[in-house]
Length: 333
Image (cartoon, rainbow, N blue to C red; front, side, top):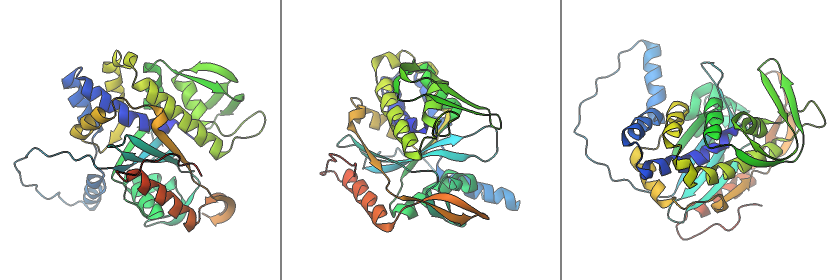
């Protein structure tokens, strides 16, 4: 349910920032804030829990690394953080990116999809974030589709809202009245139907909306379609010239609210290749499955199940996207 998707945008947009060359020192500071390699997260926590001292690291002379821009998969997570120590991934996406062809295939994964979470067994996909953070989501996704996920990006609610506001909002043709109030978590969605400019909170509500106080609830697929729509609009807005004028504030928002394992050199180089990128180059993929009830956590819960044939179909689309000489025309089934 969340705005997450805009993570994709972030990926390309952040790069544009670096290439522009505005406020180089601020830009460098931002890259240090966002850069959190997954392989360094869990081992350090494990050491702390055991009360052991971290092994001393030998100082090594750093040599300039050659940045390779091979095709890659990046995991995009919209994180539901409200001050808790652990959070859930409210939006889960996988993007296959081919820098050479400037092609992107974007897959949304329903939160209730049943997957085997390493160390926890069968459970809903979005619980992996709660159990073990981005590292565990990555392992779950790799095993689920039998692919390698080279990178990740996470964005929280506050960062999404601020970024949309800084970009001047997004224009959306809202198909239905959206109204839902939940006092337990402070959710208060109230958006009227019709073509309109949405600010940050409204864009977040538009991407999150599923349950309704009036009329029928929206499905997970309606929600994912809206998330992908938001991604496209943010990509185009973020790469427009007017966004460059807001560069310094945008840098601060990204530095405070985004975590990823792309190095500054990688982002800068990707920005050069994607400088003329538009949302029309994003091919969206729908994960086909079945809604059914399944015993889980002591309850008979509604879940989304995906068979092996569908997983192989998705795997094939991803592989085709990453092939240097195989442009993707249309990834929709």
